[in-house]
Each structure stands twice: as C-alpha cells, then as structure tokens.
Amino acid sequence: MWHYGDSETDQVQNSRTRTTAFEERSSVSLEDRKLNEFTLQRKRLLHLGYRMLGSVTEAEDVLQDAWLRWARADDDIRTPAAYLTRIVTRLCLDRMRSARARREVYVGPWLPEPLIETADTYEVVPDDVTVTLMLALERLSPLERAAFLLHDVFGVALTEVAVVLERDPTAVRQLASRARKNVQNARPRYNIGAAEADEIARAFFAASRDGDVAALSELLARDVQIHTDGGGKVRAFRDVIYGLERALRLFVSARKKAVLSPTFLRTVTIDGLTGYVSLDTNDLLQTTALDIRDGRIFAIYIVKNPDKLTRVKI
Image (cartoon, rainbow, N blue to C red; front, side, top):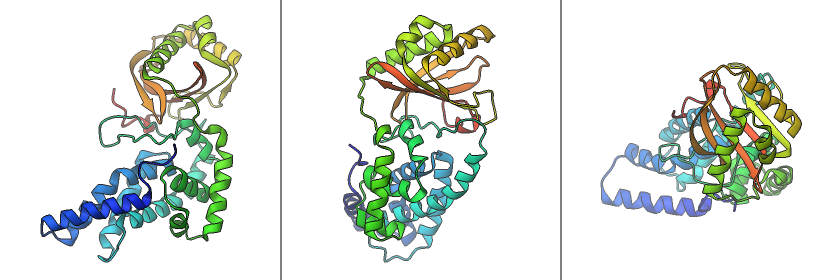
C-alpha cells in the first residue's frame, strides 16, 4: 500500500466540497477562503515537502513560500489542491539542488530529520515510507524522486504529475518506473506488532547499554548496518558501520569508555520504523530507529545532530 490516503483527484473533489460548504455557510472574504483552503491542505503539503527534502524545517519554509504564492494567486483556480501540490513540488525541486550540494560536504552519514508519530501538528499519516526508503530516495534524481513520491506514494495520476513536473506523460512514466526499480529493495516488506516492536527496542537499548555480546548477537542480523548522524556537531561515527562483528566491538568499546549510562526515555515510531528516544552517555538527546525484519535488526539509524532534534520532546 503506497498511496497516501485518497488519490489526488479525490482530495481535490473533497477539498472543493468542503470549501464550497464553507463558502455557502458564511459570507467570507477571498483572503479567508484562501486561508481555509490552505489550512485544509497544509498537513498533506507538509508531508509531501518532508518526503521530498528530508527536513521538516525546510518543508515548513517551502510551505511559507507556497502560502505567499497562493495568497497572491487569482481567484479562478478551480482545483486548489492540485495547484498547491504543484507549487510545493516545484519549490522543493528548487531547494533540492542546493541541498545536494550541502550533503556533499556533510560531516559523516546524513539521515533525514526524524519524524516521530505524535498527535500534534506534525502527526504522520502512515504511507509506508521508512528511513530506509528515504535513504534510497536520496540516490534518485530530483525529478525521479518527485515522480515516485507524487504517483506511488501520494496517489497523483501520471497525467497530473506530468503537469506538475512540466514533462511529457511518457517521460514521467519512465521517471517513475526507473525510480521504482531503484528503490525496490528498500520498500518495507515486514510487518511487526506494537508489542513485539516495543520489546525488541527495549531489549536492544539494554543490550547496547550493557555491551551484552550474547544478547546483541541474538538481536542483530549478520549484515547489520549502523548509521550515525552527528552532522559534525557532536561525536558520531564518520562512516557507516557494516557487519555484526564490527557492531559488537563498537558496543563493547562504547560500554567501556562510557562515563555515564545512557537513559531510555520512550519508544516511538520514527518514519514508520520502531525506535526510541534516549539520552546518550554524554546526556545528549538522540533518536534511534530500527529496521526490524523477522525479529532481527538489519539497520540502526541514530540521529545525534542537535539541529535535527529541535522538535523531539524529552
């Protein structure tokens, strides 16, 4: 299941129905009608911006720019949802060029800003896009990424995607197809219950805290990967750690060097993956997302960069 709720066409129709009802119930100004429509679309647009850019902060900046353009737009736009989708996508494409340049000089592994499922403004509607898939999307060209997200994840018809990207429908179909093939292995295929997920997350935290080789050997896959994003702001591994043996040595060494024990705060869902929020051995906030398959942890994604944790509640 890849589509983000209703299709774009359904969203447009539902949006227009809600807006028409709103307009019929009261005599409102053009500014108020625009604000109402934008508010109805905001959560979906923020989610699209985040999936395109990997950053809530940048996605919010895009939405601010999109609002300014929307506020100045003519009043005869028949499909506001499609129009706003087009604005946000194109603004994201503009930003992706500079974002790629910044990531080329990024210190250590880059991970997307952790988006935690909560009941607040940034609540995530499940769309099967995990941290693992987000990293796979980084390998795509900006147009491939946009075509894949719009069509496969957000359910936008290819003809509408072609309008958004200003490309021929045949070319867009090829973009989406290439993207789909390139990220195929990163697509989530393993479901895990909430109770089992919580148990594995807590067991991994305890085993890594204690440097428990036996417990870690039972939890980790032989080809496990450890990605740690410190962004050059805090101490973190400059390279991805590959393999069980290196991972075990890492956890044992960390246990011996630690002055303080890490503190477990709570389990969470981070971009569709089981995870938790904790304080590290230096009492600094971090998030850990776990890619769990058949009861084993195949990948560990740790975000320590404080710039990416400003929205994480302790």
